[in-house]
Image (cartoon, rainbow, N blue to C red):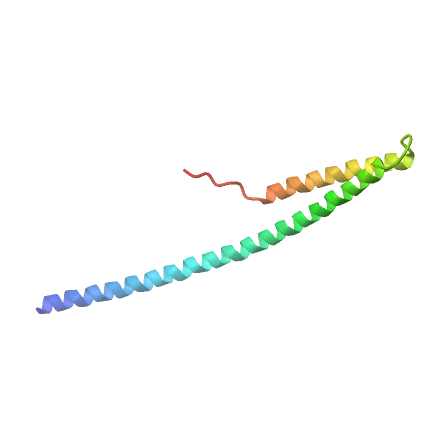
Length: 112
């Protein structure tokens, strides 16, 4: 090989080494971003799970109150009215929580 070819090969090897290092740095950066995303997503899913569990309890409470009201006899008493008012207020609270939960959920990303 000529001196020129040796120098060209050495430069090419050095460029390849630099490119390999850049690729490794990018790989580490991407993996770090994926790890950060996974951590944030897990925290988000924990929040969603807690919110859903709370809503399940709210729905059971409303179901129990409705059953108690349905089992009362006669005309609507002040206690029955209080129960109705409580159910209505609780239903609004559940609806507000559902809206808040919906707002926590990221929208579907359009494809194309």
